Length: 331
Image (cartoon, rainbow, N blue to C red; front, side):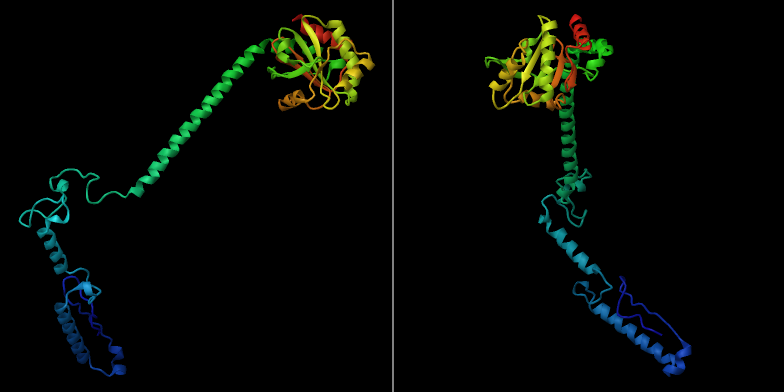
């Protein structure tokens, strides 16, 4: 038989457990009556201890939480001292226990109650709201940018619509000596390319608006360019006029007099001299994917839109080239 131990339940009632094992009687050599007696003495001792000190605040009995006396004592203090919270109702034990004013009168609670919400709980919602607002703003900005780009692209398409039709019209003529010509798909306006004339005065591609232009970039250090120059001069001599012109721009960056001297020695007299000693025109065309090497040639319509381009030399005075350019001019 075993005693209940030294813990009491919440009703201050000692627990009395009985456990008998008659098989161990011979080993323990203790009669059962002696064990029962010891258990009874132990239970009585526990009961006296519980009644003597029924106070859980000093940890006398770990099985007992706050005793009724502890709870009632502090509740009485709340009843007597109504200044614990200025929102408590002005009532005593005769009516209701003190409570926040709004609860006492059956009104819904508000953030002014004693138990205020934890402000950290609002941070995820606030962060989510800020993130959503930032996302919406980003979408609006991107939409505006793409909308403006779309508007500009539509304007470009309208300006280059004649070039689109012209490229389709001359497609069957891209053959023979000009078979390497690449038709623009779709045609786009070229940037405001700038360079100088023979006197050093600034010129721009916009100065040729209203005329079809065959723009050619060349240099004296470029062997294919030098071989191509007489054919370009012959094309200008054959078809040059108010509706068409070959604009050959030299991009030598060292000796500005060397290109002029070479043209004179080669007998190329039908081409007007234009130059860009900084070679910026080549870099601008390279940025838009229209210049990969030398020579570089572009066929441009009167609105400044690209019709076709060619990377490398061509026999521009050949019947194939003349037929192609004549078809462009007639449109």
